[in-house]
Length: 364
Figure 1 (cartoon, rainbow, N blue to C red):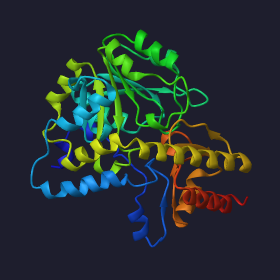
Figure 2: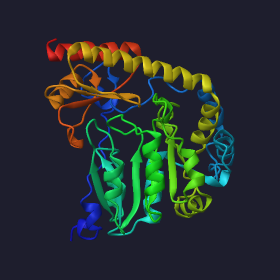
Figure 3: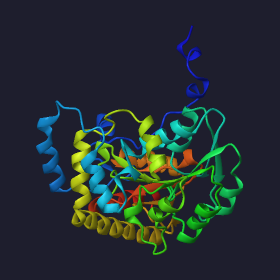
């Protein structure tokens, strides 16, 4: 007997998440001097304050972490002006998504979301035997509120909205968000995924925390993996109605947020100077990339995140050739965006190197 005969069929059919190629893997293949602009990470390490705090906490690694993340929850409560019982901590937004699905989705239940979007949405749904209802993005890569609402049925339990969206970088305005909050049936939990919140430049971006008090079936997700530079420690959080948070608490694993992540997040949250530095650097990087794309005659999608989607001939081949030059980007064919590369805004020298290599590959 094969072990697959014993496993759940919906798990056997899952395709594992494919992240951006690690720097170390490319180096093992013999490529040196590698830069990675594929995974939307911060271009700088965490601040010195964070690094020093983590180093000081290393001596306590023989102890389990605080299972309730008390100090971090308190810091977030002060920052967000929400009671601590309305905050949930997880090992990155990914874990929180999985716990949400674990709590609210059973076999045959549905989740609606725009597509293409964050690759974990279909993975966490199928992992629980749920059904994904993908609503195609409208030009220019923007979610359509009317179509999302029309896709909801009695079996819909969740509506995922990445805002700004990954991999397109497009965000929706406060007015469209308010329509979703107000018109979505009360049996559907609206999951507002704000991983790139700190990079947003539009002035009419939704104030999602206002919706926490307005709609019980609502949760907003945020992460320390992007602008705070803690991707390697895996930590994110959710804000929602206290009753919803209590349901998530029942389903999470004990000690799910490690002690170093808790320490790092507390300090990172207070270091606004570092956040402003990374925001400024990223926006300048996006401006550099977009200006170069215009000069090269390449179409791109204006982004509210820390990456940009650019249209190039034979994007998959270009990605592979850039890899051999030590530049890691991400072709978007697997998301149905044939001909597009997603490029994270990096350090100035990294952006220049990517553009130089791209010009060589395009013969421009």
